[in-house]
Amino acid sequence: KQPTSSLARSKSLVMGEQSRSPGRTPCPHRLGPVLKAGWLKKQRSIMKNWQQRWFVLRGDQLFYYKDKDEIKPQGFISLQGTQVTELPPGPEDPGKHLFEISPGGAGEREKVPANPEALLLMASSQRDMEDWVQAIRRVIWAPLGGGIFGQRLEDTVHHERKYGPRLAPLLVEQCVDFIREHGLTEEGLFRMPGQANLVRDLQDSFDCGEKPLFDSTTDVHTVASLLKLYLRELPEPVVPFARALWSWLNK
Image 1 (cartoon, rainbow, N blue to C red):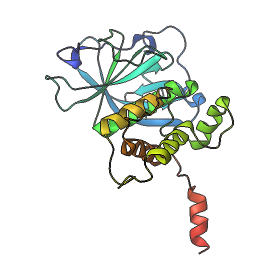
Image 2 (image 1 turned 180 degrees about the horizontal axis):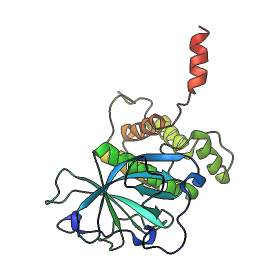
Image 3 (image 1 turned 90 degrees about the vertical axis):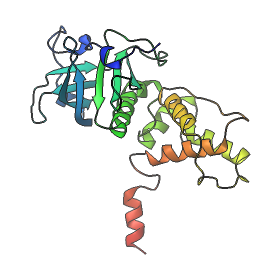
């Protein structure tokens, strides 16, 4: 059962904070390029008030700084062995876009009661929260075959070759096969939207390394919407920008 107020549900993820964790703070610039950066509010563990910090996602570490221009991080969260969950706003915090990072790795994506070691974060908008959750989830699950939404096409195909030779991601093959079998005579295919909640659930499942199956009760418009969502979130479209520009210039 969810607590009355999600503002009172989380303490700081102590295993990652610079001031409380043993060992050396990882050097951010040695962890590769910035995967995502932006302002978020984090909840203080004692006062339960909010602090705005500049968060930077590099490698499998989430750093936060007091100011955008600072070089030395104020703290960090190691994302190995964690899970990220969107939280519905409670009656005492309507309109807040909340999510938390808590201990729990692969196979533990189900929502669980409040964890005293969870880090509660607040984004400025629903879209910003979804972008952060997706970016963090991609880091957590990519080594296990998940996090494919927003991942480079070639990276997904390269990872999935362990299941056998293929030219397209499993999600694309599965969606196309289903649409060929059930949707070629369907009116409004790729135009009429599918069930938004089910599309989101399927996206979460694929992003968490699962391979959900479609059956005869699955709405073909939902599968088409899932395929469109996957293609839309590719960092580079199926027809690369450079090739599209070359074709346009040589018309």
